Length: 77
Image (cartoon, rainbow, N blue to C red; front, side, top):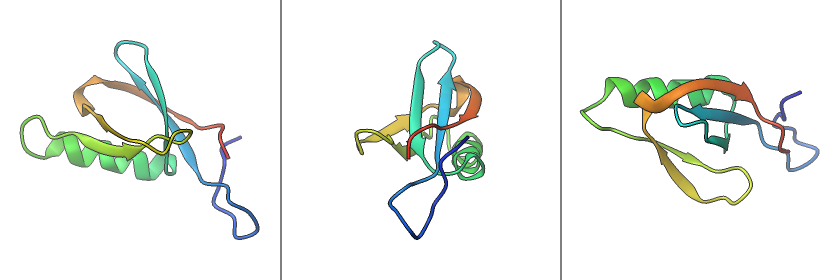
């Protein structure tokens, strides 16, 4: 079951972005928010990347929207 934002604790919704290469990145945000960021980047200028925050490390990562093959609910929380 995906993590959800909850006022009682520090859980954050996460989603797993699966890349064409098979790499998987768990990022902060609901499935809908992550999908929207990827779609916006794909409709943006040439080679626009979707910037996200990796759930475990907190580091910023840039995802090439043309290489995303699937989104899954995350497991972090």
